[in-house]
Length: 494
Ligand SMILES: Cc1cc2nc3c(=O)[nH]c(=O)nc-3n(C[C@H](O)[C@H](O)[C@H](O)COP(=O)(O)OP(=O)(O)OC[C@H]3O[C@@H](n4cnc5c(N)ncnc54)[C@H](O)[C@@H]3O)c2cc1C
Picture: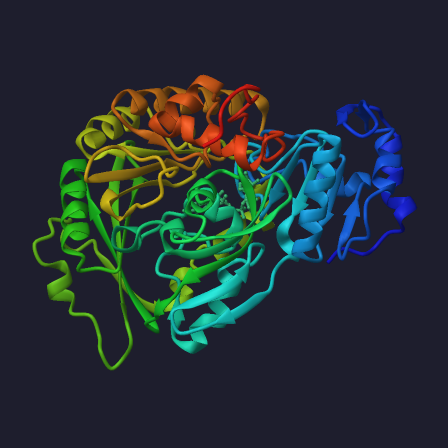
């Protein structure tokens, strides 16, 4: 928790400038950041703290992407769920926009809000309960934190993202894909119950059986209908170890054929893959697969590698603890932080490519891609089965298999012309994939218009707008991506 300033200090920053931030219904006038001082004075007592000092505001206007910078007028570090209820009701009265911030690992201002209130979820971080098949956690808990508590009890969430230092609320608002997705779906498919504060400022409980409309509007719902404050997530028995295989290929079609084989027969627990730059130019391919086990049982390598056509003799096989495997990116993140590269802009593009189009698209993109225009960032390519996905707002191609294709760029040098070029390239690849029936994973940095969002949600668009009207009628929540810019006044809610 941050150090507590006095209420006077908290409010001082607001008087410095006077931007219009909303319309006060009770005072019937425009609210500016200058007169918000007096409005914030009317805030009810909070269990946590509301900050308006310039340092806190500046840090809330930066995310991992470091491309978009929108400065809020206040940042709430909630001390309780009730604080979030209070702040949303307050924001609603004064028509001030609000966004939740998990770990701000998104890349295009998704967790930012210009002249609004950011709710920094990191203080809502209690693990309330760990049972044999589930855990009840606050939304600000990190997956790594949850694992520290579940692994000693021999339990794990079924699917985890490659980096586990992400917040549970932040990943559940986007989807959460990983190497175990071919078996277990995305993180949002493994949620039993949610507690959500809607844009009306009401605390609601929802699940597939109770209040399912809200549940489906919030999971992978990009923060449009509510702030997730607590989640009951599935747990399954965890192995203690992982045997990790890296298999190398020269040929894209052979690589993807083997990946498809592995996700179909599910002989591995985890399947991913990457494009790797060759010293001589061009790309080769690395299939990464892991088998989880608990000694004395050990994986049978011959069985696991049978029928695969990788380049014999180049394979790498390593045993790790299960946690070290899940936490494998931690040392890379620490290193990139230590040399300052972690704070460079990250114009990432993450696409869901239909199985039928993957070789064509990837070959075409890879032909003009060099390490310089990825900034040495990794390029992921792996398949998953779409029948595992249950949530309508997690938008995916209409085929049985799709591939995640992610170009995780770092703008190096970190200047605006490099960023602009990378963003333009992202847009081009997005359009190519869209025209082939593919979708964007909306953690990406791709310039997107209102029409793009309409196209993205397709048959779900009207449902999302209706849900927005029902749960956030003042259109206050999560404006960062410009998904729903305005609600038509006479639209009927479902
Ligand atoms: C190194 C790295 C590796 C990654 N690996 C993967 C991966 O393997 N698989 C994958 O799927 N993704 C991956 N991601 C992307 C990541 O899952 C998303 O960016 C995710 O949103 C980040 O979580 P966060 O806590 O940082 O959320 P934020 O970036 O803080 O928030 C993301 C969005 O969710 C909203 N939000 C945050 N908390 C809540 C809440 N409690 N309720 C409602 N809305 C909320 C925010 O307003 C924002 O719109 C990776 C990102 C990084 C930086």
